[in-house]
Length: 307
Image (cartoon, rainbow, N blue to C red; front, side, top):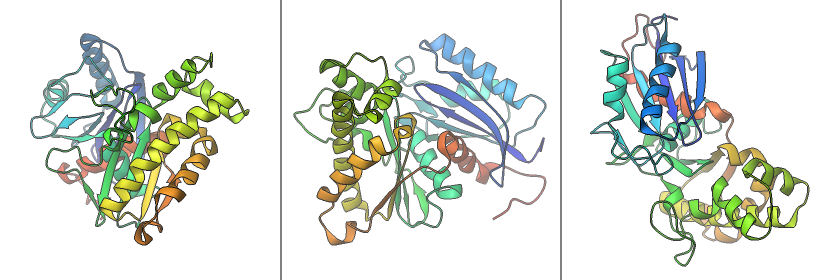
């Protein structure tokens, strides 16, 4: 285990997780920390997390999944939901923490989709979209059975597909993006503007499950925008499946029931109506496992890597 592993890191607006992962997808050691708000604390958190998880092991490569946009050729990230990092040299930081270990950078949406395609709800699917609905709304594509990141590394970023040009301002600077409706904070802000007094997305989900009218309306509004983005992506990319994870997806049928209802109206073309929408099987581990999977081709294991 000490040698035939990669170090996987999943960086999001809420948490940063890291783990040692084998070529078979088995996670041998894992830890996570809350995402700090300032650049010095972010760097300190990364250093502490990576050194503690890698302690005593010799990972053969590092797979980094980060909220985007990402710039893999330059090793830099500018996560919309981590304002302290703008054009931040993430690969340089990791190289200083773990010198001599090759690193691969991918967007967190791509990583989650890749993890689910490798070991979860997307196994065997030719064309799929993975979506993470949490602090933001990220996405990643698998086309022809292979992860497709695009030339810049940001393909599949469904959160910034415009659902309504006259909609609310998004954190990216545009108006009416899917994320401006469907992310946890966006749904909470809208519900609070309608008189709901709860603190966060978890409370909103619980109130919706109990039948609170405003909470249910917030989820319906977010699900409608998400359905518009999914329908557009399905028409463009000829998708078989959409897999959805992230903290907001933990609401279960509170999210999936209105999502299916709206999709039924938006998926009008015959070839897109085969689309199935399912929750992640890997849960919070999807991005971490996808980060690991992205690093495996770079790793030089002492024993043969399974196909």
